[in-house]
Image (cartoon, rainbow over all chains, first blue to last red; front, top):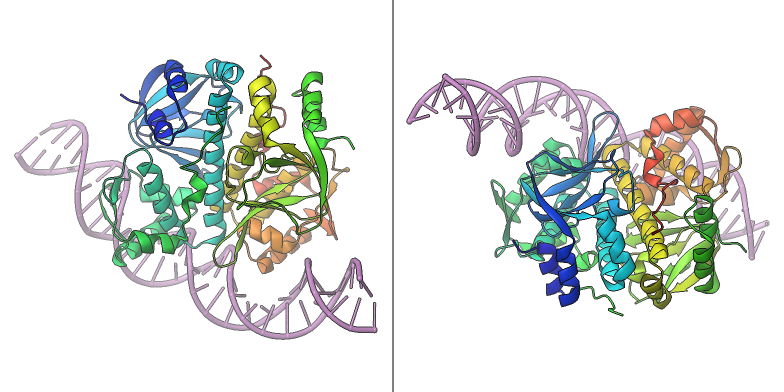
Amino acid sequence: MTNPLIQKLERHGILFQDERQILQQIIARTVVYKPREEIAHGGSSLSYSSLIVSGFAVRQNHSPEGQRQITALHIPGDFADLHSFLLKPLDDGVVALTTCTVALVAHSDLKEITRCFPYLTRVLWFCTLVDAAIHRAWLTTLGRMEARARLAHFLCELRDRLDSVGLVNENSFEMPITQEELGDAFGISTVHVNRVLQELRSEGLITSQGKLMIINDWARLQEAAQYNPEYLHVDQKIERD
Amino acid sequence: MTNPLIQKLERHGILFQDERQILQQIIARTVVYKPREEIAHGGSSLSYSSLIVSGFAVRQNHSPEGQRQITALHIPGDFADLHSFLLKPLDDGVVALTTCTVALVAHSDLKEITRCFPYLTRVLWFCTLVDAAIHRAWLTTLGRMEARARLAHFLCELRDRLDSVGLVNENSFEMPITQEELGDAFGISTVHVNRVLQELRSEGLITSQGKLMIINDWARLQEAAQYNPEYLHVDQKIERD
DNA sequence: CGGAAGCTTGACGCATTTCAAGTGGGGTGG
DNA sequence: CCACCCCACTTGAAATGCGTCAAGCTTCCG
């Protein structure tokens, strides 16, 4: 199976022949996780990072009262816990939403990359910086926008991220995320997520059939979300030396 | 003036003689900003990153309606826009809250570091990962906690971060942040920030005199915030080769 | 001494939560 | 192949945290 991270980086002119081979070589092995299984967890000192090849996963942490906050959604092509290379113990855990195929990369190999391949180091560093930029975008929606705009913003972001790994057909994509999980990500109760999604449907912005999400009015959805995709940095270039 | 980032990293056993000298050498020049001045802004393609030597600054972005969301607070010792090294254009801007002394580091020198000094590269990468971990902690408070707990959590975090650069005396520290700014950071209206702070005061958790914040009951403040400082990774070690 | 910026207070309204019942559909065991 | 069950989704009513508006107060600094 071709690796969606490599595909994405190549398509955007970030990755070249040399680095591509290195990235493929350092994949120690491939593992499959079932829904709700932990891909990585905070307590342990991990020695591998997980690159998601297929499936969806979330980063989450739990408050003492058992409440869950989802801090990130990871889709194919995401290096889900690349930050665990330097940040141990992890302050959060990664859990599979769907069946996930994950490529494992040893931290010792990542260290080797920082020693021998400065350009590839910057590319990987860049990946973690985009993660942080997405965190900031989520902070902005949580802090300053109402539930309707938060969810609309998420749908816009998800569409563009899935598009960059070729997982959008026309104007629709698979979104295997429950309303409860949406609520846990965006600080909204499950009940209210439901009502807001119905509102977006009744306004003709989206249609959903099971896990299939269809965007009917991309312009109005972006407007409702005050969406500006700049923060995703999809066309970012990195100086090659 | 000694550099608080270097002090902090040295104290925690992350930085050694060699890297210390390199870090000091790459400081191109030192600049002073006045309150409300922009240290870095999104539109431009920056070629320097800013290391805060003294003073407070925030990262923020504005919604189309003129609303502001503060996504990070930066204190002395923080590399405020290190991420602009690889992420251009910046999705946000950095603004001085107080008079700020800032050390500028050229992006070309940072690139040189990734080429020649793998350990120092990992240290700098680590700094951006801690930033991201703080983003996740803020996401959790915004998503799952009430205004009282959000502000309490912020006070706990700020105390520990200031402590790591020696800016806490006993149980008090300077906090030159207006209630409006607190609201813009944590998704609370100014009015409500005021009421919550009064509540924390009347419960005897804190006292404040002007910009001086005094923590009277550290244990109960942490409890109110459900605070766990792990995510700050203050004692993190990084393998040195 | 005046003015601006920040802090405080009260009243009212609304977005969202909470509680409490359903409904529907897909998967599993008999 | 059907019946059951669990999980996700849906709906309504009542409660509330917080925002908004509007006004007054205090502190600091030129």
